[in-house]
Length: 301
Image (cartoon, rainbow, N blue to C red):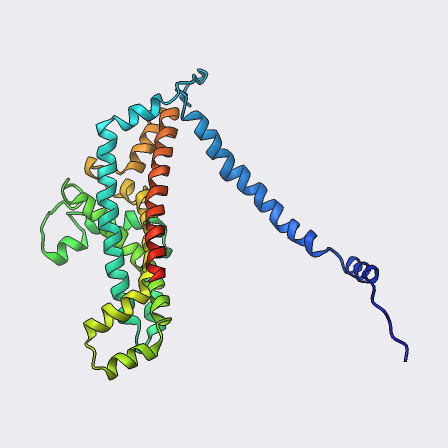
């Protein structure tokens, strides 16, 4: 019986006859993506970094003069900017802690056999699918002292949720909690479903109480997923703009993103606003790095 020898030349010719090679297909997908990232992500970052060392104003035709680190020094020594950072930190803490508590608690309730579980989970995920501007306008109506539903249900009369400087930031944070707790819930459900059932069975055999089971089994195994949720939500809450801008104009709700917007597009201090944007970027990266290091420690346990 005659056998046919397959040589490398025959293999390459057959591959060529079929069309594009694997390398060509890979390049066909990767190169446009790299070009897109360079044009729309990397280039603006480098361009704005250059402007952060100048006194450039986009509202004038005057040339940009190099001022070195002047913008950064003035911003870091400005008490008004640090007040914006303090407001942002307070907002991030309230918002993220609330989302973790509500989201994880809801996931614990849904992590069991209940009727219409799929429908309930889908309905709970709806808030995070909405536009943040739409959510802000919707909750602005709910907070309204004249016809808002919240004051009517709580019997608070004409209480000014968004007009009270002490309550405005909490009102914005509560709206953020309502919108993004489903995100934490979704990640928590994935983590809870991955916990081995035999651990709970062993705990039941040993007559372990619910608190012991939660703190010794559930929470340690779900902690890495929760940390990932905290990382994402902290980054998003730190740079939040839509909700705070739509809901309230109180100075007590002027987070750093709103201050950055006013500096760039109302005061037209383009160079200085670029410097502020990079200060915010560095802070977010530093906070994220701390979270990632803690996440690695949690995974090693």
